[in-house]
Amino acid sequence: MAKRFVIVTGGAGYIGSHTAVTLHEAGFTPVIIDNFSNSKPEVLEGIAKIIGGIPEFHEVDCRSQSVMTDIFQSYAAQGEVIGVIHFAAYKAVGESVKKPLEYFENNIGSTVALLGAMNASGISNLIFSSSCTVYGQPRKIPVNENAPILTAESPYGFTKQACERLIKDACKSNASLSACLLRYFNPIGAHPSALIGELPLGHPSNLIPYLTQAAAGLREPLTVFGNDYPTDDGTCVRDYIHVLDLAAAHVAALQWLEENDASCEAFNLGTGQGKSVSEVIQAFEDANGIVVPYIYGPRRSGDVTAIFADAAKAQRELGWKCERSLEDSLRDAWRWQKKLAE
Ligand code: NAD
Ligand code: WQD
Image 1 (tube, rainbow, N blue to C red):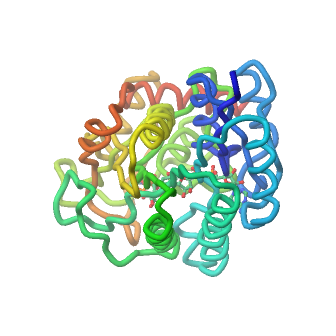
Image 2: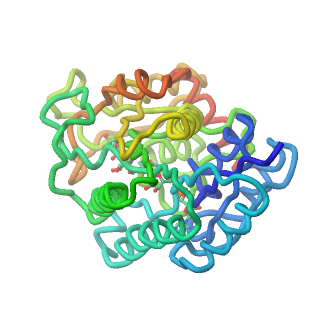
């Protein structure tokens, strides 16, 4: 049977590596494109151990449209290229405030180049990594896909809004192009084998990598950013989704694009359940039998009080929903942290 290739930009990264594994399990052949700007070649070894073979890989910057076009065409000559999943981007909200031009250039530039390469190679299905950050502080929670897109709080958030817009416009102008804009809530956890997970490069700004490092004694106690929010326990509420559930949604979206005559559709990917920072700490302690050292500190600027997904559209249209619990995610996150410390 002809191979069914899926191009995975940023496939050596956190979500991309788990999606590459899930694509393989679903019978696709992932083709990873990454420049290791926020990942390491060892990730490919982890993927290889899980899937039982070295994945297709190209060390390339996605902004190089001509190189990307050559790669796409070489796979089209060997089988069928079903679509592209575009993870490659810079993702640190705080850093984007300090380096906005780098974020615009990389995140928006790579998406423009990618659309050009897809066009030149006749590839018609695109899945884009967007974020719940496009909603800002929503007026109504759970938030659904029709909620207004508010002015972005950060250059990072702006790049997600801009890429959504340019993909929508590209789909309008090209009837053969179809896209899913997947708005992730808070991805956490790792593959249960602990062979791949989120690579901690520098001081983690996200909750779970910091929490696991603090629990391992590698960092100062976790500072809970604010306990005076108008929520049940005063701490912020988010929707934490296991990275493998998120990965499975990409496979469902790809199959949906293959089967439907879609143009450009946005889907929320979350559990539909909001959990506070205090609840996450408690769940981590219950799941792992470890005490988390933490203190309460001031609010972090730019944090929204509460956001969680109405993911009914993804369940209805894609036939996808989360299978793993918060405890599952936190168990896998801790197993990964212990592996990193070996
Ligand atoms: P990550 O940094 O772990 O992975 C991104 C990968 O893309 C890295 O391996 C990096 O080396 C690569 N990359 C970046 N720019 C590149 C370029 N120009 N050419 C080639 N490779 C490049 O990030 P992640 O957490 O896996 O996130 C993946 C996507 O999901 C990103 O677009 C991110 O904005 C989005 N997203 C992430 C989260 C989250 O909390 N992790 C939430 C919402 C959306
Ligand atoms: C979660 C909660 C913090 C660290 C970010 C991006 C968003 C998306 C996901 C990409 C908040 C609290 C955190 C700490 C804490 N990424 N916290 N102490 O801010 O919901 O979303 O990642 O698209 O765009 O903004 O995630 O993990 O940083 O924070 O108390 O040391 O944990 O205040 O309530 P966030 P996070």
